[in-house]
Length: 220
Image (cartoon, rainbow, N blue to C red; front, side):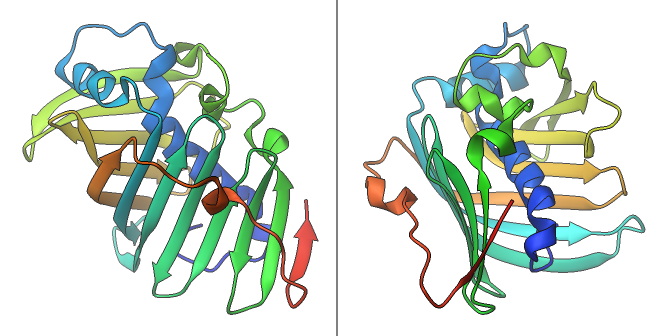
């Protein structure tokens, strides 16, 4: 999970969390939106989205609602197939999708994990990044109303074997500002997005990774 330094065996879980975050950004491009302030907010945010840059604060809690860690980083998205999720504190770790591969780069441990992006995203809502998908078949979308100054949506997975029980999104002024996920073990991750910018000119080289000779590469 994201509050721990992933080892090579943790890559599938890292990918699952990434897929959830990416899906939260782009899911409604393929949904016939029903009336609701939350859906209207998200549709406005996603309309014409080509690239995205934001920093984030992440707080993680266990099933007893006790804090297990806090983290900071940056997220970059260049549609349709490329993204970076960079942890900057309390340790450095880069997760890079170049359109063909997903790389998890741990500089301190000099370790890299590699997985086919097609395989990593197969059969998941994140496929909406690559092509239209009927998201309503995979999630129930529920309007939660307004609180803390945000319009909230809840996504309830229809697949009982999936990694998450629910995902909640908080938006204001057609900007995604908060996200909360709860997994099947009761662990909660809360994200606050800061300084989000749309449709910047992001160089392609940001989404390219070539393993260093000093790093061990573990393929999946």
